[in-house]
Length: 299
Length: 238
Image 1 (cartoon, rainbow over the protein chains, first blue to last red):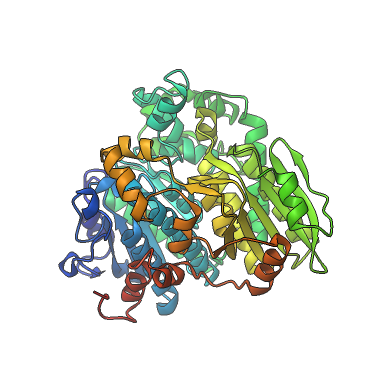
Image 2: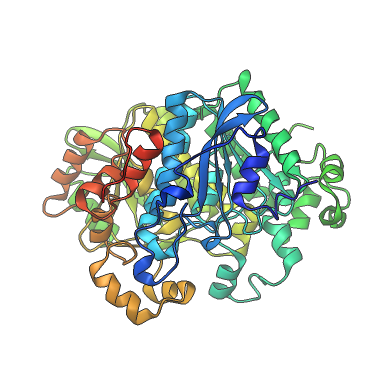
């Protein structure tokens, strides 16, 4: 077993795709770096924190990107964002079978905040352009930094999100909420609470990600392939009907769970018999335990 | 600017916009056509309810008024920073709003964003920044966060940040900076009704922001890097 969490971006993308098939675009040797960091005496990275390129996923032609959590928390700056936009546009030009985004990021890079914010918005539109061209975009979340801020929004623009239970998906980090409203609002040091709130299991039960996987690159690889293949007989395009059903799901979520303040109460309301045991379960046992309990799913 | 005053200036031919818990919704007349108007006011934070309310108004327009243009009035302090919103998955609610705007564009609704007061981070990328084109009033304040908070997080001294902010559009707050970087198509001045009518006429569905950022000098790397990835350009400009 090879941990997804512990691997860096380049290791993840190489291990996710067929051996030897990954070809990097704009590799570090080209030294395309952020034009903004030097003035703040902040070190730059030769790939600006994101690895992009093409490869094969069990023989299917895909484009892929992996954010490097080790460089500024995977945050999106001007160059980083432009690489993602270029990749998504290239996917349309080359009519590939899909785009796989390995997201690990805190969102907008504050050192170049305005450029980063606009870039994240461009990535959102590019994801939806790619889907409109009937090319599926699949997001993987399993890195230590989670997927936050504007990129937490981008993830929800993709066709599917696959997470490990260690992966986190949210908007504002717990530290930000604690700083704004105090430790009574959200204790960022309560790790169990943090994972119950933004971790893969809660997101799966709410219907925000389509699988909870073990922390193993091979498991991500298999699940990404199966997800990709599911688009052979359905469209990847976002339709008005998709939005209508998402609207129903999200409206119902506020109505049914809006008065709760503990994720376990939500799990219980969804019909999970022993919510307190869920955090302890391995991914596979979890998936079995909660079968039929997921929001928006006909049991 | 108060939304009521703005609405009178934008829509002198009349409107029926109402405010409900900081959410703005209604219709108005612009140059012989009816437009749908949605937005927020009072610098409200965007929580799950108001994101859903805006999405609902857009979906309603898509269902019942094909091709009707949509005007989004932006005044927000950004996403709501509460535990409950995070637990409920606020990022998906905000994405849902952004996706509704995107699908509106694709189905032939012209969408114009206008920052008339304040726009911040997550509240902005899923509203005004998803429009065909986004504009601002000269006094609008647009930012990701204030310089003091930014200095705390980046560990760059506030004095240095303030000094750099005066000459560099990349992290300093302000509508002008977003214009230079291509995030805004233009800043409106003078007759707002005419500005809006022109914007509705000029809108197209192409994302021009990185090209504008290059032309205006605020984001010189974005478009060249994108083109490099596309293989349509071999080297970066020096």
